[in-house]
Length: 75
Image 1 (cartoon, rainbow, N blue to C red):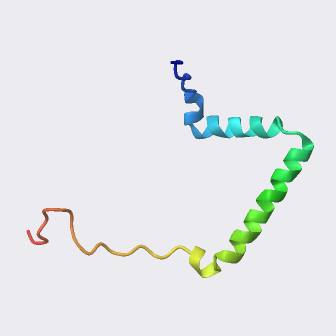
Image 2 (image 1 turned 60 degrees about the horizontal axis):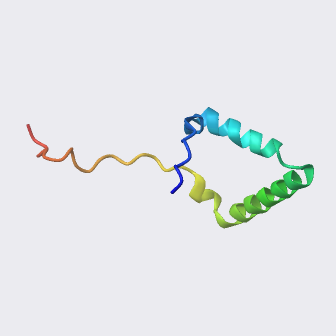
């Protein structure tokens, strides 16, 4: 049985993960980068056609209907 790989905790932060993503992208050849960008463009176009603009707009917050658990509403 092999020992588990040690956890790279630098990837547990936004900055660390972002740096790892940039390093992985830099390691790709120009052809691979171009292919990835074309794939991302295609996905973006598909998503743009599937989601109506009204569904993207945030709705105003709704007031709470009841208080916290165990609260009867009167004091």
